[in-house]
Length: 85
Image 1 (cartoon, one colour):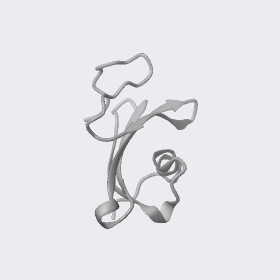
Image 2: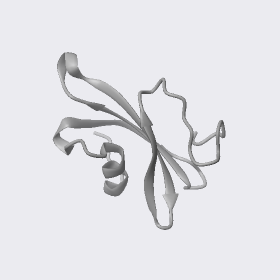
Image 3: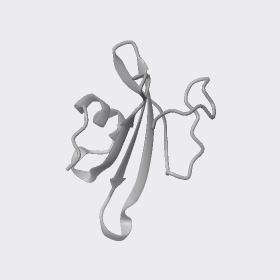
Image 4: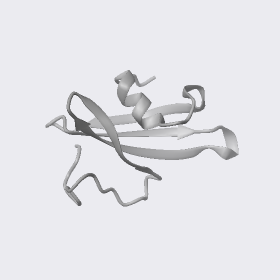
């Protein structure tokens, strides 16, 4: 099981109840400014992948964009910038 910061997990889940999600992976940029979290929602044939990009605002990470892994990622004014390793 992958454990990530509880606040980052809440950002990635958004309004989905915790028991309906499973974190597959997380990557935090070396600068600490951005993070990407990949998780699944639902079960069985209703399972979906979700990818959330979070951006640090002050001392916390806030959701910047969420969607399927094939979505184009835009975060703030850093379009096409390398966010994470």
